[in-house]
Length: 604
Figure 1 (cartoon, rainbow, N blue to C red):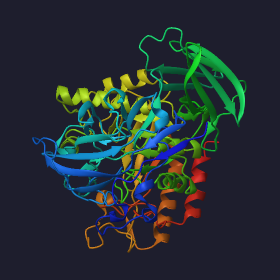
Figure 2: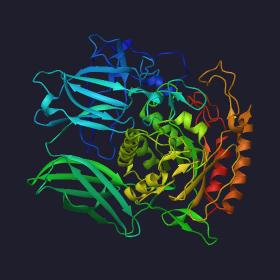
Figure 3: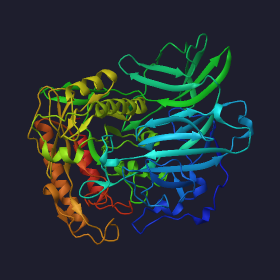
Figure 4: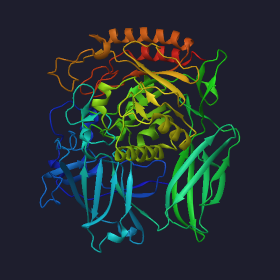
């Protein structure tokens, strides 16, 4: 299927938009045009032909939480960049007592008149209430996952429709998952990203249409399990056709009632790995009363992640039934100009490509969930992903007072229920991305609660992946991994003979590169937690290689995976392998790649 992009007409004078503030920016910021911002299709695992991008300039206002919708607006904001970001054109802050309002008009293409219209949001942080033509159509809580509404009944007969969104984000004054966002950014906490921060779009569908596709590979049985969901509550007689393609050639066609799962067998399947990230294309077509009513493009991969004891009795990680050492890097997904939102899809891809250039085969996505296209890039480029749950609740206070003592946070019923709901939604979002191989419910002791119960639920809900219960946190005998943190040099001070032992954070070697700093006036960059500072790229490279050589000895002693902190600088940290603006590598790329490849191959 070909993707048809239908751009909305101008709602404002685009020439009035410009990035706000004087902080450093990425090179991609120079190429942003408000009439074509983030124009890549947002849902790559279920891609339709027709859609209309609603990104661009919207009216915005900040008001008290107790105030009704604004009579007038404060100005324009560039969606999907968060309010606090430079690329929003606003760069303002909101507190837990404020709400952020958005409004814009749009039209429905004439060829869609006989279709239902879905209004889709990639993500809004944190609570969103949505009106269409002054009628409230729904609400959503959760800052990292998509949601949608069928707005067909609320459209008027004119050429112009109106959307209004009310967003409330209490950041670290609330219990919700928020990762490293803070109202008072400092140390290891960074600027908040409130409101709409991923693409908004509409698309036409039939009354009965596809709503989800879940794929689970089984390389041992040489099959892929496909489970399709539709909008129809009682889909009697409806069926789907699934076409599997290898390099454009259809190799399998299977049909099933929409209530039935499909097991599709593939002879001698081509396996996915970072070294060979092969993807099978898949077309899913929905039939109702014998006619095609919907069709989407998708893809899947054949891969397996597991653990197994080696000949020395060490529990090793395995990829596709072979011992495999994930040599990873911590990736927090912040940008100096867009904060939580990358300037463009090209920028999103760049971080993954840069990681692979350095010889890493894994990314630990640290206490943040990215847009779906980031995971698509990870699938296509070939890199393993260990996915954190964004931290929340009493994060800052808890991490200072409770650490490695077996005491868990007692959350309120509302906080606990919200964690479970958002964690499930995140897993659902990423379930069919082959790059994602590990779930991490907790980072250190931040908001850690009911570890055994949460870990066991995660294992049961997704038995196709591994679970690292608490990376560097309070450790309980549950899950598939023991993940320890040690700064700055790699070391093993704990070992688990029953699970695989990984060093899920180490390093943080620092180099301050003038001209590429978030806060050039700052003097207290510091070597927190024993972090090391160097004045040259060579100094950082040499120290990394020294640590890499030690990793080799630790692997022979039982280490089965490692994560270096970190891929880029951040607001208050200069320990990245790239500068925060992504304009400079701070290490010798070839030397880092060479030693990383040696580490990756040590188990061969």
